[in-house]
Image (cartoon, rainbow over all chains, first blue to last red):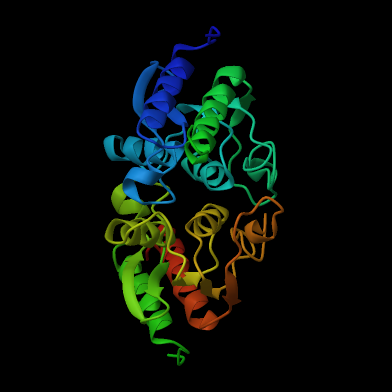
Length: 159
Length: 159
């Protein structure tokens, strides 16, 4: 197991692992109040359990954080997530005006930060957080790789 | 009041009006099962009430529909919404694999369908619904115009 540069990313990885154990695509996210280091919300992907295609880990922490804080914005908060956010989550992060986003694995196919629509670089984007990609990348990526390898194996005939 | 081409868009407009009456940005959305014409979910914007920046009308109907239907996808459903979806909502619509999106007013500043990142035209976008923009456009736009005019007036000194 590779060392992780932040206990918050480590917590996000634990959420991703717990998601995998539930049969969810292993992505985990943690929202932290930057000034105090307090964890406001932590979640793994819940798409399968909820039957809700929008129940990505990032959306869940934003919603749950909003439920425990005043105001629609989480401007003083940082997000730690094990995979580059997709366009939906990136746009939600802009709406919530997060301060920083730390993500682990890059997602050339489905990412919306450094790939695809590059949401924060759009002229109409109302807010651009500071972005730190590749934090604990190898572990974030290997969680996903192992999960999808397992899925493929399930479909293989057993001898 | 202009006639509307669809009772579902009319219902979406009523949701937008109800949102305005609650002090929310007036956007309403309705999700309909295409084969039966059954309304699966209807909602107006709840950003202010919930303190959740992601509580756009479209996200709410997707989440509420998922709660009452099997499976993470709503492939046989059509969305009626009074404003061009933002990038977050457009990406959520792609994830949910909706069949069609009918929207009223175009949103050159914040829209993500015909403007900005044009989410459904992105190479990495997994699903592109049929899009029908400008359905009841004048009324969708006037709801928003009246709302923001009222907001500006509130800030004006009173004599």
